[in-house]
Each structure stands twice: as C-alpha cells, then as structure tokens.
Image (cartoon, rainbow, N blue to C red):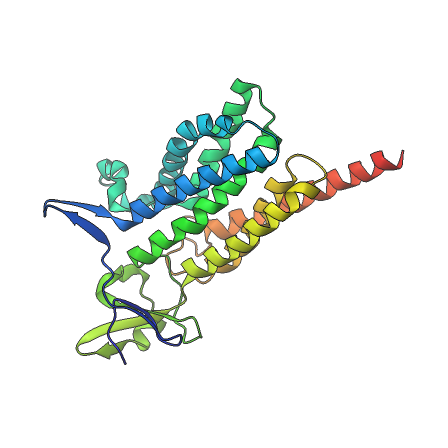
Length: 290
C-alpha cells in the first residue's frame, strides 16, 4: 500500500501533498474550502449570465441579484446548519458567527438564495419563474464546484466501502465524530499512519449534479412554461441528494432522532416538484385541446 494524503486506491489515484489551507506569511491562512466556494459562486454567476443571453434576457439583472443573493445564501447556509447543530452552539453563541470554523449547509444556502430571489423579483417587477429557470443553472454549477471544497476539507464522506471509487483518508485529517464503527473495523495502517476508506459522496453528488445541469440546459429550449427548468432542479437534485445523504456519516438530523433533515427535505421537494409539474402539464394539455 502507498502513502498519500488522499487516495482512490482501487483506481490507482494518489494525492500525496494536499494541504487544507494556504499559509500567508506564517500568521494568516486561507482555507481551500473558501477559495473553492468562491470560485463556484463566480462560475455560477457567469453561467447564469450566459443562460440569460441565450434566452434573450438582460444578463445584468443577474449581476444585480448576485450582490444580494450570494450574501443571503451564505447567511441561510449558516442559519440552517446552526439550527440543526444547536447542541454545538447553545453554550457558546459567539461561535455562531465563526464561519471560518466551518458549518455551512447547501440546502440552507438554496433556501436563502430563493427567498432573496422572490424579494428581488418583486422589487424589480421581474417574473420570478423565468428568473428561477435562469438563475438555477448557476446555482447548481456552484454546487458542482463547491463540493470539491468538501474534498479538500476531508469531510462530507460516506460509510466504509471497498468499491471501485473508494476514497482513503488519514484518520488524523477527519473529524472523530464522522468515523463510524465500520470504518474503525477496517482501518489500514501504512508506515505508522492510520487510514479509513469511505464513499466519496462529494464526488457522487458533483457528478450527479453535472447530469442534472446538462439536462436543464438541453431542456431549456423545449420547456412548456416558465419555472419548468427550476422544477427539474428541485426534482433532479432532490432525488440525488436523498440517495447520497443516506451514505453520509455527518448528517444533520432532526432533534435526537436518526432522521436526516436533508433526506426529509429532498423527499418533500421531489413530491412537490413532480406534483406541480403534473398539474401544470395537465392544464396546458387541456388548454391546447380547446
């Protein structure tokens, strides 16, 4: 066996020097997680602007929105995480504002971004469903890239596996709370360093989201009503997240239960999205028959 900070041994891929931060002058550090999230936001904005041009809209509208959308998405992601991790913050409320310490939830960011979009469209007198169809391709592009921040942080991984895509991590690089009994039973030691082997759920979700993004882009010219592309996101992302969340060992759970809040929300979004899509399609079909 070969030493590496992160490895995919069954694929023969090894990353020997993979730091979590960039050190500046020895007194300040920047997390790769933050850099990657920022790049994801930038890429998402550029893609949304491209989609706006492609569909005959003014791309500057999406630039104006981004100023507020990104800020409130981050706030939403933090609030969501804190709510479902309250035990970690209730005795030290100041830590709620310590985002550098980690703790952002994608679904919270999505909720924050969507609520901001609703308010923004109302103020600008812009059709929300059309706006959502355009902005959502940027949103999912940001998610695709952002997941690699989890990779750099050695987090958001799944249970033990020895599958083709199994990812090997140093025990010292991951949070102890995310190491399960099954992982401990399969710990590997290489030259005195302990490793766990897990599902790379960050990779699963990123690849799944690429497929959803391609579907949305291809379907844009064929949609029957504004908001349909956004529904594809809700259903497509929801299905993938429900499955992938079930593999993860760092789930945010409802109270003291074993119920993963993201799985519940994903299921709800899929049901709501499919139901609304069917209703709209039926109405359109009846209208076209008249």
